[in-house]
Length: 457
Image (cartoon, rainbow, N blue to C red):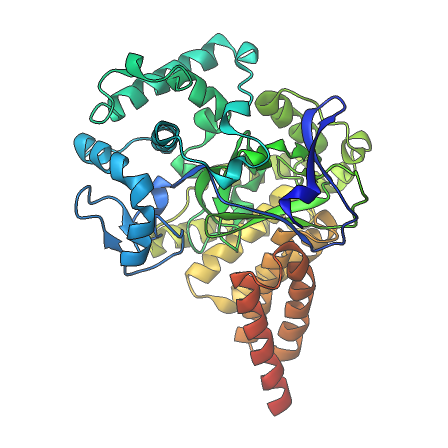
């Protein structure tokens, strides 16, 4: 769909929104966007290219700041316009490093000073972004003032006197436009390679106000970007669109039929959360209450918290204590804790309980990182029915989970089952990611490999 087919309009009770100018089928690419500004997460430094956001074990670092790393000369050259000024700032504060929010704000300041035209402002510009300053508590305002002071110190090498900046560039106001990510996003929320998003999904927003968490094809977070036009998308717990990323490019896909003039929606929060928790997060972070059918009916809340309350509360606390392991020994400790709780709660918690589900996913991740493929498959297989229940229709998380389990089935010689699982993943992913997405191409290659193996057998 061409951008002209997306119409900005006044959505009743929501302010500005986006709607479709024509009928849409499931799986259509409605919009492809590049960020106004973006940064790689601090936790991914050294393992992911600063420009293309792809994982690479042989990155080349910037010879000046020695912080930014790239796939090669091409990526470094393409990134230079955004990195040139921040390079001096990064070098000036070494060995310290700015918070991700401060680094992103710095890139926004330099972008505004260049007065360059950005495609991401086609439907909505940076100056149009709402800050909702009047709704902020004094505590939040104090936090933003502290960040504004930190930004001033960080940019000192390039901007000696903030008062000489154009009126449109106000450090405090920039941070208000990045809320709530500014105050709530931290490096610890980033999912490292080999770790599934289910470990932390119940606690992190997918959309962070006017910013979007940038994830790779497997939904593992790598950074954050500001996409002004896409900030027009309003929320529904049962949305008709999903967002995935290809590098730093944002891809908006429809996941069901959309009529002419119908509003396009995405989910700002993880729909796996019970209604009360979703409502609390939306009110706290976005200052509104959702009245979608899913919330009105409190759909599936009973299944999400099924089982004995004391048992799932213990599991919930244990999951919240998980810190993303960096060594085999830490993974072994995590697995032992998961095994203990899963064993103790057998018969007390069904796998549909969302905290039990998170524990199963955590156990699967641990086994994968410890190369215990058979046990990883055992835990992964138990997650498939809950995923089907909570992610009906077309959802990228279910597609990725099916792909992971299918690969585990293949590792155990279960070729027919693996092929069937990958076919299910394919049918979902062709809608959520599109056939041109790099992850979809990997899935298709695996599917062809498994089909060839079946013919041999």
